[in-house]
Image (cartoon, rainbow, N blue to C red; front, top):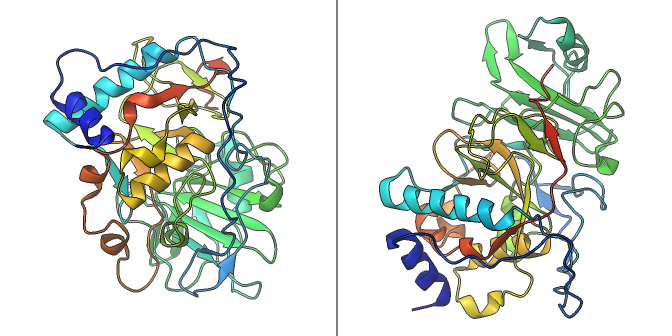
Amino acid sequence: MSAAVLATASLVAGCGQAHVRVGSAGVSRPNQVVPSSHADHSAQNAGSSGTTVDRMFAADSVWNTPLANDAPIDRSSPDLINWLVDQVRQEFEHGPTPDIETVTDSTPIYRVARNEPTVRVALENKTAWGRSLARAFASVPIPPRAQPAAGSDAHMTIWQPSTNRMWEFWELHRTSSGWRAAWGGAMDDVSRSPGYYTAQSWPGAEPYWGSTATSLPVAAGTMLISELEAGAIDHALAIALPDTRGGVYAWPAERTDGTDPDPDSVPEGARLRLDPNLDIAKLNLPPVVRMMAIAAQRYGLIVRDKSGEAVAFYAQTPTSGSNPYPQIFGGIAPYDLLKYFPWTHLEVLRMQLHRGTGSP
């Protein structure tokens, strides 16, 4: 039995808490070796046209910057990881199980040309603090056959590399009078974005823009089909938890919808990573899980949202043709793949916490 399956077996069936490697804040690891850089797979499938796009967000953004091996660990990391491991164990034992969202509750990413006709997306939020976002949605290059992801969040991302702009939507739907969305965001100069919303993201932009509960872009941390087919994920991964800490969030999150009063619960925006000393090559992981583990060790996991039911990762929603994920996943169900993920080797990096919800 591989080390990963053995760890999962004890986690799923276990009595009491799984063993967690303990780190302390500010402790350096001078003898650790940073994993070698992967090839930069900048030709990423992002739409039905089959063309290529550049990497989203700046090279030094929170999503694309490799972590130092001696990145300081938060003092609360052991307690938070114990909480997370127990959450995962309960999900595998009782359901709903951890998942990789693909067709439902992820996002399609449509790459559009400069000459794509534009349409207005009516913003259903009529508050004063939504007016600038409504203006950003006045002219959006949405392809005629575009469809949001299935699921209640109904996400969709539009990327126009020729203008270096990106639009994203939450609860997007098409009516007889046109497109409508409950909320979302827009980014100009997206290839130089820090990976979250600032006042510089768009004229009138606010930090609370964005399609997720943290305001982090829904495309950020999403695994692209082309990355999974190429065999390397060169950015941090987004993760969502069914319960997140209430009244506090961690940078780079700009807000939270967390409600859990447990001080050991993980706040939205927290950045986790796999122990740099973990030898992933020895774990005998399925290919997709190995890619995810390498990305989690090199770039980390960022708690981007609160999920509806269970711990979740995100992969790009297909925009045309057949569903590629059965082949990408090797015919293995996502929840079975995630049994191999080395959950007990996660660490929480030092957090910059903010009190409140961050909402307007």
